[in-house]
Length: 314
Image (tube, rainbow, N blue to C red; front, side, top):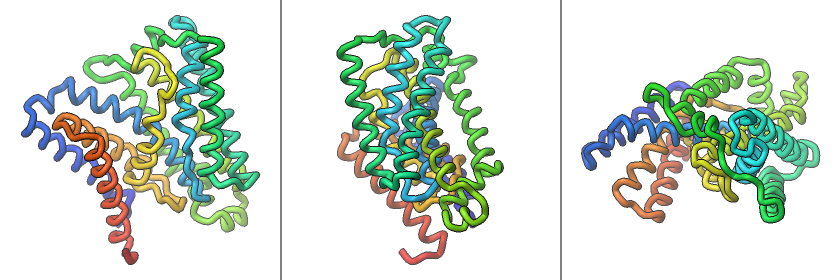
């Protein structure tokens, strides 16, 4: 049985069960407004999970610990460029994505060309970006408000469906196709599975890995730009909450931590499941310590399940 076939259904099933438990404990937990808010939050987590999916699938023990800093950069820079005006919202998005792409390319160059371990390279870049943001915001005091158009895109709904969820669905569908059907997606997973074989078959391994980190940076910055619209303004530390959770949803979603497998449908389903779990824990007043234990236990359970399904010794 393939992890890519059963995992999304299992994760959505768990999410549905958690919703039913929440409704039994707290009437109204399954209300339309509550569900819309949960799927909206899941959309942001799913976007950050896509960042990790790309770099982990590329192999080399890939992780991107700079997603939080790059998201903050995208939010702060995007808000400064658009200056709260609808007319230049798109320009703010372009600026945010361009900056994220550049930072991601730096990460990829450090990992693929200089041979710096991804954990060290992305952590160092995150520190530089965070430090630069602190200095820049302190000296320049840029505009931090989101434009009404961005607020509509990231925080409002049309016909009861959050607009950002529609955007996420489009991005998710494109990601699933690219990662599983396109030639580049096959090269990415081939690079992660065996860089030597990929190189011998004509794949430019370094270029593929640089592209994976560059795309991760672009997506993180765009997600931070959207977060600015969701919360109404940009601020330092905007994306920090997604650094570890993005890795968790990628692992739970079935991305092989050794590289070579990028089932984004599973990652998207994991984002929904984890969001519902967090919502339930919050609703029943479970503290931060309890949440951390639950996250860890959930991650361990899925890693063990992977071992069992694959028939490998635990």
